[in-house]
Amino acid sequence: MAVTEDEELESELPTGRPSRIVIAASVTARGGALWVPVAGLLAVAGKGTAAKKGLLAAAVAMPIGHLISVVVHRRRPQAANLPARQALPEHPDSSSFPSKHAVTAAAFGTATALEDREAGVFVAPLVLLVAYSRLRTRVHWPSDVLGGLVIGALVALAQAGIGRSAKARATACRLAAMVRPVFSDHS
Image (cartoon, rainbow, N blue to C red; front, side, top):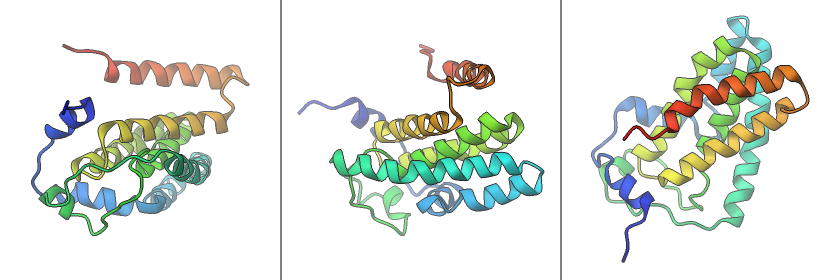
């Protein structure tokens, strides 16, 4: 049986118990709960509009992610016996694609960054940590997480009305310029 690219990438992740930070990121992001206190911190820091837009995008993206997972029936990685998977109190058995954690995180992070660049810089590491946590705990394939990130970002971009204003297009171009090096081939 041929090994898929997802299986190959997943096999390179450690199988041992993840750090407490990785576990906490995965657990607290369930149902988008992590983004409520993050929005509160942003509001206290004077970034209330960015916080509201982030929460709205996350609230719109989450059910979209769930709807897509109903249509796309994909099995999760078979890692139930690994310490990495056993570290989570949850043992999801729903469709693996897309990662709803990643969908919600990307929607919140993208909407926040589109509204306020400084707020986006604060939130981006949390978005990436949540996405990584879903890989590291072996509950998703890499393409589930990447797909979730793309879907969430698209929801936030649609919410922001990308294409309707010059300011929004300029912001999208800046975001694309920041993300492009991450996905370029460095080999």
